[in-house]
Amino acid sequence: MVRQALAAAASALLLLVLAGCDKAPARSALNLATDDPVVLATGQRIYSAQCAACHGAQLQGQPNWRERDAGTGRLPAPPHDAAGHTWHHPDEVLFNITKYGVAQAAQLKDYDSAMPAYEGVLTDAEIVAVLSWIKSRWPPEIRRQQDEVDAAARQRK
Ligand code: HEC
View 1 (cartoon, helix red, strand yellow):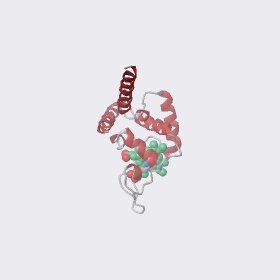
View 2 (cartoon, helix red, strand yellow):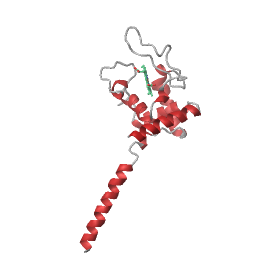
View 3 (cartoon, protein in one colour):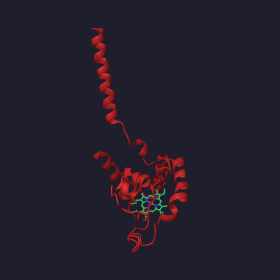
View 4 (cartoon, rainbow, N blue to C red):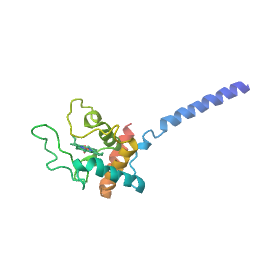
């Protein structure tokens, strides 16, 4: 009797653990933190050192950023401010583009892009910090819209 009860308790516990796993916010480490001053200070430092040369000190992007270079076929760096399309993407897409580059993030094997991949250069936390800082610079309405895009993407998971 005791054995059976124990076995039942054990399998109930296992079920609970499995159910817990299913609900665990697997990507919680990826949440952009626009209200954490330490994260934002780190993000700003990384942006100046690693991103500003192309995306602009004011996040303004490169001139004529919608037109591919006639020679290389590559796009210029787009703005990261409200005028660009960075905020059209969920957090995970922004993270993947920054970590792995555009071709891999978009699963376009032969896509040639000037955007570097920061895997091995920045840690995951540093990537989240720099994206958090970029997001913190958007007007509240744009931040809210990106929150919605991100929430919709997480629901599809
Ligand atoms: C050498 C220039 C260069 C540097 C440095 C650079 N980028 Fe980019 N980035 C680009 C270009 C060019 C694109 C557009 C890529 C394309 O579509 O081919 C881009 C696109 C992106 C996008 C996608 C934006 C969108 O709307 O689709 C993100 C996100 C991004 N960069 C983040 C960063 C971050 C964060 C850094 C610094 C850690 C950084 N980039 C540094 C050139 C650069």
